[in-house]
Amino acid sequence: MVSTTSFTTTKSEEIFAQAQKLMPGGVNSPVRAFKSVGGQPIVFDRVNGAYIWDVDNNKYIDYVGSWGPAICGHAHPEVLSALKEVLEKGTSFGAPCLLENVLAEMVIEAVPSIEMVRFVNSGTEACLSVLRLMRAYTKRNKIIKFEGCYHGHGDMFLVQAGSGVATLGLPDSPGVPKNVTSDTLTAPYNDLEAVKKLFEENKGEIAGVILEAVVGNAGFVPPDAGFLEGLRVITEENDALLVFDEVMTGFRIAYGGVQEKFGVTPDLTTLGKVIGGGLPVGAYGGKKEIMSMVAPAGPMYQAGTLSGNPLAMMAGIKTLELLQKPGTYEYLEKITNQLITGLLDVARKAGHQVNGGNISGMFGMFFSDTPVHNYSDAKKADTAKFGRFHRGMLEKGVYLAPSQFEAGFTSLAHTEEDIEATIRAAAEVLKEI
Ligand code: PMP
Image 1 (tube, rainbow, N blue to C red):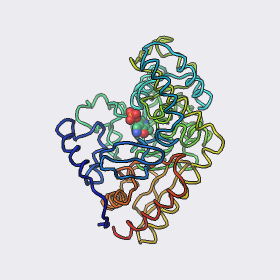
Image 2: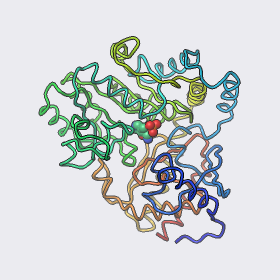
Image 3: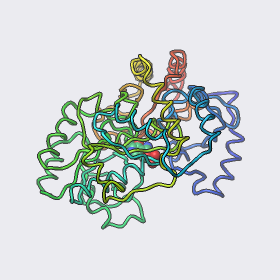
Image 4: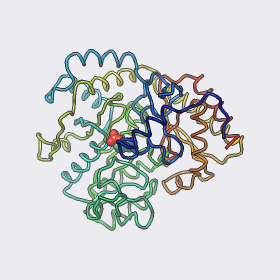
């Protein structure tokens, strides 16, 4: 165990013990309970810039960034002051407001595939809605998703990731009926042949392919050269839709997301996280012809009491404005590459088998000697070792995602000193685990 003198979590322990009596597992989203790393979950009090403080006043350099939204740094003064102004006018109209137009225009201008957009309140909602749209537009029911890709907790997407049974569409969670997932076909990520085979076996029945174009939910897994281009060709050949779930990667991998960075334009895109600047926002958008099917322009029903609410729209607008400043993505690439190069280096020097990488401000490291191209590769990583690494880093003031199968995120607020301090902490921890 890493030796520390000042790291105590007494208040976290008390609050979390109480939380467990009030909420399932003490949390409102499972990974927060630290099940995959073990140890006492931390209860947080406040955030600022690149830092997060817990209720015991321990300060951490934060590489979770609220799971992605905090790309400009937490509690950015420009975002907060714009929010305060909006707040004075009230929190929700449940009716059209000008700020919706402003954010919609920004999204349409930025994301190559999006000609028209609908705002919702989470990534899950965006993915559920896009799925309905894929089916409504193509009049087909089957979809292809990839093992290890997460598209929110909608029934249809909760399909077990694992070779043989995967293609049978067995549900991942009790409460998801088999007949609901029987139209969800799965393939290993980065495997074009598997996708072709599914299209051959299900001719004329597949509505489309949905994927995290750069994966974050199996850990950080980038697409192999030609994979995204191949999917574009296969879907076109089969009159099926290509959908990029850019909830995590949108405005993070590049301002226009993976589709801008890799030059492959899908038919539809889902967004979330960054476009809400830390407030609950999701979105789906794409070609006008397809989006015109959405009610009330067309017959595909989808609605939301709080959708497009002024506070959430403003947080998104200000966040995107900050991201438009010159040098943003160059800076994220520079510090994140410095971070991952440093981490891999100190890990190898300490005798660990690791691999990992980054694109812009999204990164990941696996304790594994197998290069990771898909979910089965990712699952070979040493999770027990990651658990020890995670705890050691916490004790040294670095907050990493509490699972090896989650990407890490940097922000514009992270300084080179933060990165250096993180690598120094890692060097010490890695010698002891
Ligand atoms: N899609 C992707 C790629 C995601 O990373 C996530 C959340 N991590 C979701 C969808 C679901 O978004 P939310 O948690 O906002 O419902």
